[in-house]
Image (cartoon, rainbow, N blue to C red; front, side):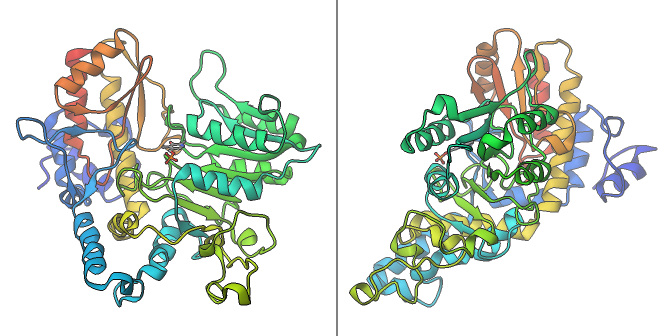
Length: 446
Ligand SMILES: *Cc1c(COP(=O)(O)O)cnc(C)c1O
């Protein structure tokens, strides 16, 4: 039931139907208003599909930490049990059972994995973890030459990415300090200006082998114009890869049409597939069809037609598509949660999810703007296309104490030393009321 009063009623209905763009003046800072938005939210039933962590008093926690670990879909347990039962009943026969045979289990995600990131079937495979996939794809796509030895990354960089990329440079006998280029925010600013990235590409692209940026930066929540960057860098002869750890399941992606060369992401943040879940990787069709690309090989990357011919056909013959980068047979118990996760994304669809997400994060921004003191500063870009659902809050006084106070009040969010709190209202399971409650707590503490 919609309880918006008077003249706003019709406007809010129209906004919720997607007929108008949301602006600050369309929001109200009251709990009643937040509840009205929840009541009219077409995705409100999705929350029931998740297990929400409880506080010691049994009340649900105010979970705003989906950028770190997404919540557990209720369907996950049954899917894992299904495979445990199959293993118990069938032993090795499980490889060829009727329902979701283990032999081809990874192919269950061929379509849904591709839909999630705007790829074609065959361009995406779910395997390994993010850092492993980054290594596998850099082995193929980082081919430094004397003229082009460099990799360009964005700062701040997630530690694992920096280690992985530096180690690739070192493994080719080059000096990471010389071959690793970074684009970073200007002094006194928090996010990267596209014009600075363009200037850097203009000046140095001839020396850059690979441009490897985050789709959404883990620290600032800044979302890059991936299509534009890919166009600029590819026109200058660079290979373009993206780390989509904070973008997959968060912002709409069209990796195929944007002409991205390769991408990697993990599945435990916005994809809700569980701690250390099996990750994803994308290889553009034009590379996937190129069987002569150098790569690290294993039996699951081999053409299934010759995989078991052993000494009769000992040479590695990669299968076409992203599947050709697989190494081992898939970890069934670890992959099972992805079925629940990707089914939900298919059911809801990224456009509807993004629509709610912009509204939900927009409401959080609106409420934060109304906090009485200047203790909290949002460093994430304000315009919707330049961010996902996460807002990064710079805390000006006693950041640690504020994080502790929030935790005591039942909020689960994330504190990054020395002074940033990251909060992500996730459209699949967070509510407008939760966003209101979080801002209300902040108004008392900050
Ligand atoms: C979360 C995250 C990772 C995690 O790497 P794993 O290999 O899954 O442990 C890597 N890079 C970025 C940018 C991340 O946000």
